[in-house]
Length: 195
Image (cartoon, rainbow, N blue to C red; front, side, top):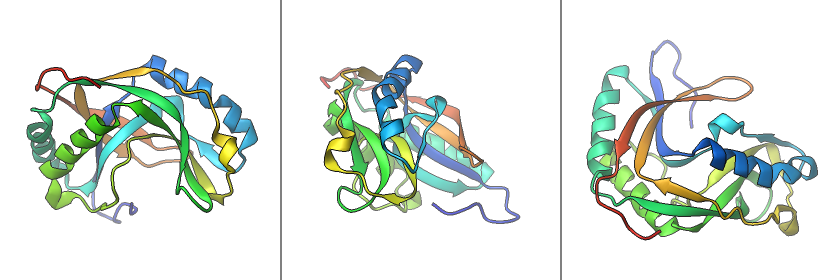
């Protein structure tokens, strides 16, 4: 993720799944004990909790509509489904942690398929080749930090997330946290599927 080029009025975009306020609150409550036991992390504010499907990056303002249309066409035939939040984890899996997250106990395959559809729709713009692992980022390390295996033991959230649309977000970088603005909601039209 690069910083915005100087002197060029570009817009930073990503596509993801919005989480309802009650689900975001449940994530905050479940991870609250970690905030005092794991130092050195910046915790994602309530309003920023989401699941990223594909990071687009910096784009020309005139390209936003065509990107949203390409994403919409790519995900439209996907079925609506329900995913279920699970326990906490970290990236990378070994060594010092950079990111703490909440994962999914059910619906991970459907989320991965949806992410693949979104990536395929804008394949010419996707620069991140890492495999997709569905998660909600809850904290980022200021500096990579040691996090022992048992430290992330939290009770599974067991909260359902209805996935019926992909949202295109505009990201405004700032301190202490970025701000995310939903600019397009792309409905899934493929019927319902088991999560």
